[in-house]
Amino acid sequence: MTDQPRFEIPIRPPARVTGWAGDRATPGGGPELPVHYPATGAQISVLVEDDAASVGLAVRAARRAFDQGPWPSLSTAERISLLERCGKIIRDHADELARLECAATGLLLRELKERHMLRAAYNFRFFADYISQRAGERYDQTPGYLTTVVREPVGVAALIAPWNAPVALATMKIAAALAFGNTCVLKPSEQTPLALARLVALLQEVLPEGVLNLVNGRGPVTGAALVAHPGVDLVSFTGGTETGRMIMSAAGQRLVPCTMELGGKSANVIFASADFERALDGALLGIFSNNGQQCLAGSRILVERAIFDDFIERFIARAKNIRVGDPTDPATEIGPLASLPHMSRVLGFAETARADGGRVLTGGTRRDDLGAGYFVHPTAVTVPSNAARTAQDEIFGPFATFLPFESAEEAATIANDTAFGLVSYVWSDHLPTVMQMTEALRSGVVWVNTPMMRELRAPFGGFKNSGVGREGGAACEAFYTEEKTVTMPKTPPPLRRLGLGE
Ligand code: NDP
Image (cartoon, rainbow, N blue to C red; front, side, top):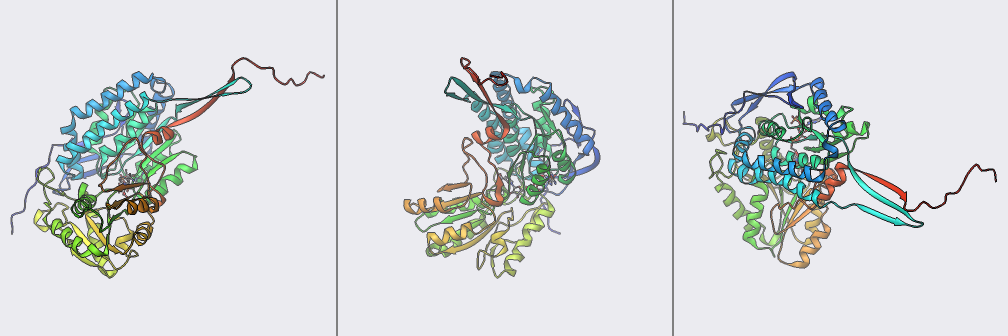
């Protein structure tokens, strides 16, 4: 028997993870669910599932904090100060939070510390800055009336987060909801509750009771109970398209507004006029960063025919050279996938590509030499057409699908031939080509000559099945507030008088 590596858990997590209703742990009421370390497959903790009654306690705590507490009417200066303290707490605990996140997700510890946690802290800082600059609307109209428009918090926000970047994605929602005066109940994915549970406990030390609450458990149990709860006023969801459909229908029954950040099958379009090396680096980052598990992955790589063979050859050489392994080792470039079922699903697409007449260029198999963890070889396939399932389905792993194109028109047609429309990437140094593509592409974001680059002031979200609504400065302000129009006369003009019998 060959020696298998034994990867150390990055931190000893708590034995049991519970939710929070105000300043009390939720009772749970559901089964205890295992949490695994994806690098070894070992169970490292359990979370106590919150049933509908337990979810009700968390929602009621948020409701009280909104209806009776000071939070919605706090001065902007006080709220800014608390948001800044939240950001500082994350920076001060970045190492611990990153280790907990690594233990449940298998994401690279280095990336978690240097990017995800800093981004999480920045989310609070960003919304603190944003609300300091808020402006109102005022209309002066004849004869002498004044109309103002104010934005008020909506109420209790249900925030539902996925497993692929739990802290980075959930903090965007928490910071935005709180900045605009809402209270909230967070539901992380049951696979990855560790860092968010610790974060909520830490933030509760500075936030008033009930402003931030936490429920844990499976989506169809805990998540569904949260969405259906009559005390919830809005839902912000990031996750898969099918789940989004279910949540939006349930919320629709109560006319509860939703934002949906959903899946993607984004085109990464590489022209012969691109800086070849930069496009190659960008294509590798676009599909293999975050262990390949990201909504904005450039998972369909469209390459102009003139450079197709060269590009693929260089891409495969680099993909084969990627260091897969221990997520705590700073030299590792791809860690394990998040779970065993997810790994089986991702690997199944290699067979799907073959069945659709495609060719597996590299990867498509498990890294058997890395023990029981969920490690795979970075994978690339070519398929005969964009109709192939690996060109249409979101795989959500380190799995690239290549297709050639002849012209910008054809590239745009292929890129847009998908049910999704989250992001697109264009690589070219020819300005007219870039302009043509940015106009033609049907996606919420187009990145030109760069891998993913979020600007929080700008909206982020998808066309078509990739989402409803946007996240970002003004987009979050619109979602997390209700507009109220107030009209009054400046000097009361005479009114038409009824009922005087004249
Ligand atoms: P899922 O849709 O499976 O789950 C997302 C969240 O919803 C989880 O917390 C899940 O809980 C919960 N959930 C599941 N079913 C229900 C339900 N019926 N009611 C309420 N909540 C429910 O997505 P994944 O976690 O698998 O995340 C991957 C997906 O997220 C990909 O499709 C990816 O593209 C998308 N995503 C989109 C982003 C964007 O910004 N557009 C960013 C990141 C990811 P549990 O896991 O505990 O069952």
